[in-house]
Length: 260
Image (cartoon, rainbow, N blue to C red):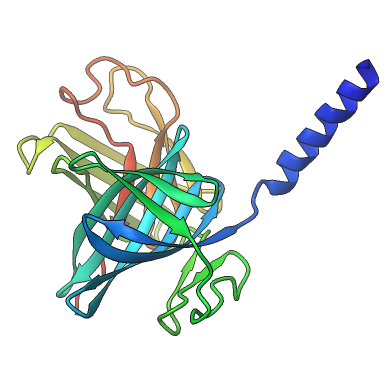
């Protein structure tokens, strides 16, 4: 009996190891905010990227998707580019992949939704390249699931209107990056209570671990890049008097499109 238990544990560990780093691709359809949508995405290592296609009055609106796992659920942002160098957020979702379907709530109002998994015979394959999400409907549009590639400005926004900005610039003289983060603690620009500046960054591949020296005590966080967005995760407990009341820097930041 003991040997059988050991064998079962080893098989489970092997299955977990084998699945780590693999990409899962999904097609879903249903309604969000009473609007018919299709969603195509790729999930790898607790990160989601892809697109949502809205159908309003016979027209199609395409939103990019950026998501990260938070416990058992995914925090998902859907947004689209507007004008020159601007973006607008369309959906803030919290959801889980359950029996192949995407089930959750829209965060701004707490309404439940269920997008059902299906097979679209009219879609191009979304797994045409390794570690790449290839749009099934827009020829030539792809999202990489890895890579430290994008210097520039990133925008944070949540469903309560709290905003922030992250800037990452390469310094050729030191062959390193400078990172600055500014986050409001209240909705719609009511505060300015999370300020972080880190220089001399030499990241390993597409991620780096940093210490916010402005805090009273060490506060470590990671920054991971995923093509059109990045994710900041907390690595240590936030010390008292680190930022303003209710402020923090963790979350999903969207890469701002270049102007002109």
